Image 1 (cartoon, rainbow, N blue to C red):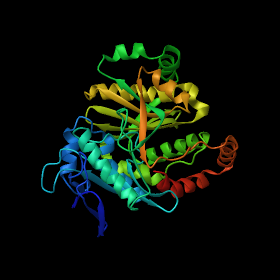
Image 2: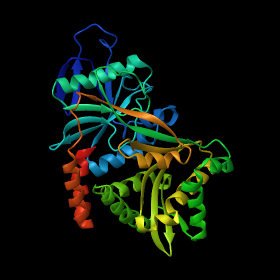
Image 3: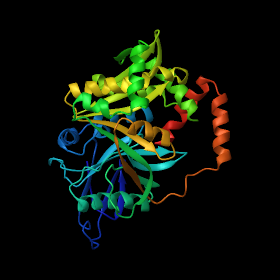
Image 4: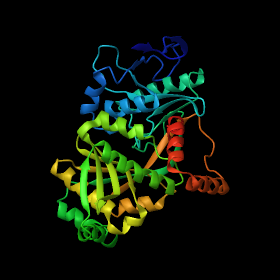
Length: 373
């Protein structure tokens, strides 16, 4: 672990040590330390009790990111070595020849709240990260809180998304009555009439069924699928806390979702389906079974994840369950230019992807995703 004060940077065995010059301000004399969340037991101890900790703060999620993409997880904290850790921000260090050297909290995570004790601690940790950019150690930093502060020191906001959550404290029959009648309730009943079979687990066969549907779904969205190794790593890291849920029609998988369980929250992370079988209501059936299981486990929330405003259909689907949307803003330093691409580029990309065999798409995902976090 390395003690860090602000301003002058020294590289030693990949650990950054900075020495302050006594500048004025609330974080001028604040020491910042770096710890390894995969080996330092103080981090999981904090995650186990902090009210804002999510599944994305856990060692299981971080170890899957490391083993699949080679990212180095680290935590910046004001707590010194051997002291109890009461706060910190977890990052992954990404070193990419394509997208640069970045500190991201966290890659491929819908949200990751800084686990800090007030704005002064947040400012001190972000000032340290910002100095690392200014001194050339990184090209950019990014944090992804689910809270909505008006301003974060020297970081620029990037909106354009919402986070949907469904409160599960009401009785199951009350929840069901609040579902959209035609879009959700009727489709759940349709799944029952069609004798769709519900299946859950984490076997290799189930993972392969899920991945076939995921490749199909990502193609429809004009994107390659995530690497199969990513889902295998999640499976290995989370064990029974991860479930692959599958709806089958006449033995064939027609819809699938992956959920992660963390404390009092059930997290919906990935979903996919065969569009030719959507009329059977497979996906609504899977969500309803997930909600019933979460309530049986005493969980009080279904985190339905991020939805881009550019994809209003996904937001509408989630709101049909009675979930509440909240603005989701990521914060970056330095600010990036517009990421909007000309329409012709999107059309060209969609044409190429729609014409590519599954193996080509899967290879592209294996190559590209490690640069995209």
